[in-house]
Each structure stands twice: as structure tokens, then as C-alpha cells.
Picture (cartoon, rainbow, N blue to C red):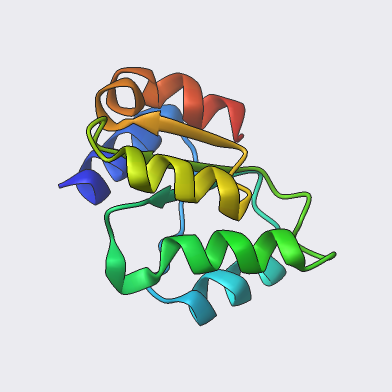
Length: 108
């Protein structure tokens, strides 16, 4: 659901998005495209968001790319873990959804 919402919002704003679903794909796309922002669904265990954030922040080539994670506000464990992994910003899912156009514009 969030992928379609991201795509629709980005399309209205004329912003290109790329999606990656594994740690390796995230790193490869970040190296090749040098995105203005990498957004992580912290509830998505399949792409290992915490490991991906930590790996990006430990890599001098990727460390400067801003990262934003979103998660249910009740998942304080994931919020803290993402912050410890080095996420630049962590938002509750509701705030992420409400601010999505502004977030995507920031990452332009």
C-alpha cells in the first residue's frame, strides 16, 4: 500500500523514485543513483532496514545520503533501533503519510 502511495505522490510531484527490497539492492542503487533521500519502511523485515541504515552510515561513500524511516508510533523498539543504527530521521507512519509531499520535495 505504501509503495503505491509513494508512487502516486511522487508522480504528481514529478519526482523519480526507485524501490529496492534487499540490503544488497539498496546499497547498489544508492551507489549508482546517489539519491537525495533514502526512505525505509522500518516494519519491512525483508529488506533489513536497520542493517541497511547501519551499512549505509558505516560506508564513507554512502554515509552522507540522508535516511528517513517510518514505523507505527507504538513500535518504540524500532524507533530507538533505527536511531541507534544512524537514521537521520524517524517518523511515525501517520506523520510520514501526512507529510509525504513535503518529504519527497525535500529529497528532490
